[in-house]
Image (cartoon, rainbow, N blue to C red; front, side, top):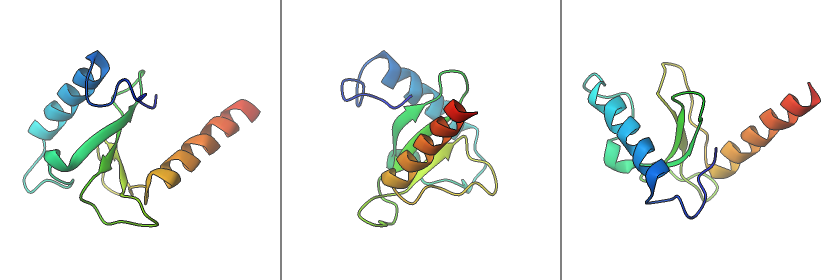
Length: 100
């Protein structure tokens, strides 16, 4: 679920997500296939899996926004160009789920 404004930067959910990210980063081979941990800002998590979506805050800007990464990273996974593209794809997935 997308983190609410009261969850960004603090609180139990924020702490849980950051612990998961720290564990993920600690297990990465070097050089890491993802941006450095200090450039990742979590914005969403899947409560039923280990998926975390995070903005790459120092990544290239596309249409005014930074890339959104889907972690844990898998070879061939492409980041969303920006938050708008992430949100649009998420909305389409929910819409298809409701229609299905």
